Amino acid sequence: MKRLNALDLFDIRSQLSDEEAMVQDTVGRFVDEKVVPIIAECFEHSRFPAELVPDIAGLGLLGSSLQGYDCAGLNSACYGLICQELERGDSGLRSFVSVQSSLVMYPIHSYGSEEQKQRWLPALARGEAIGCFGLTEPHGGSDPANMKTHARRDGDDWILNGAKMWITNGTIADVAVVWAMTEEGVRGFLVEQGTPGFEAPEIEHKFSLRASITSSLFLDNVRVPEEHVLPGVVGLKGPLSCLTQARYGITWGAIGAAQDCLASLLDYTESRELFGRPLNHNQAIQIRLADGARRITAAQLMSLHLARLKDAGQLHPTQVSLAKWNNVRMALDIARDCRDMLGGSGISVEYPPVRHMLNLESVITYEGTETIHQLVVGKELTGVNAL
Picture 1 (tube, rainbow, N blue to C red):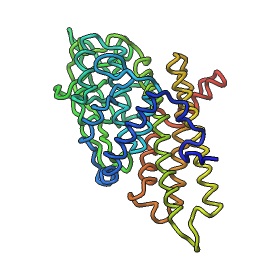
Picture 2 (picture 1 turned 30 degrees about the vertical axis):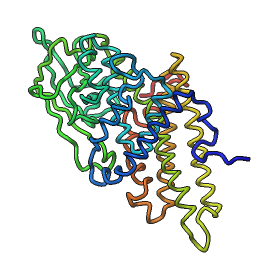
Picture 3 (picture 1 turned 90 degrees about the vertical axis):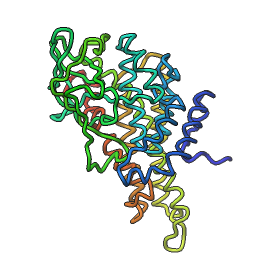
Picture 4 (picture 1 turned 135 degrees about the vertical axis):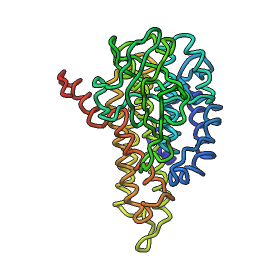
């Protein structure tokens, strides 16, 4: 019998439409040709590969699941496969696309005025503008209802004060979607770069997501006109709905990171000889490789089913929490185990597992820590909110 694809044991590929397969192949080629040759250097020197943004935009990867406004209008599986292939390259690159698409373009598309959509969405889709999403605050990100950033009316304008932390793309963003508490509830504000009182310094000395720009946002009496407020949503539904979109993409992205780790170990253990035979001839190594493939397969099936539920309008946020928890934990465990199987070579950026491992320490924390998603599932099972 024909051998199975080591990275696709259940032949998920056969379940994809022609368009979905084409999207995966196209992004996969981009990653192999443009990302893989430079990403280790970018990670080592803490450099975001900004030179790739025009190619990413040219492939239609920004806001890919949105309709109109120069967006590609692809289905949910296509967006997931985009995230999977990008994170196979690096979590930082997937984070860039995820923030731009799910956390900036999605709220403008869903809750913005027509003027806001026309102003920002085509530019964001073409990569001519970059956006960031300001929700997490320095005192804690897991309790957005305890938001300290606030906005008050001043005539026809709003005055914003507060701070946001761990913001991907913040320093290079042309527009920040900032969520702030008002007398009416949480509102979304489009704060443009260069607005007086608004600063977005980069956070340095990171040991994770080194090929990504992470920033703080500081708002000191920032004046925002009424026409820059998202009119279509009030309350935490706004930011939380954005996070559901982004978390969905993360469930796919983690698969790509895990696949890259497993692929590197399949090559390494075939060529590396120890005690007179290739490393992959050892039972202990085969068992560990097989366990990684098992976990990847389960995650693939989960994310593909999520995509079908999402396109059918049947997706529940708890299902996304379960998949984010499962798939990122899967990827992090595989990255750690692969780094260990590499022996001393495992700590070198020459091999991808340690880079993925360090990146995934952030991915398992942001957009809901593992514990938060466990408690979301626990609430669904018991009906009791233990947060």
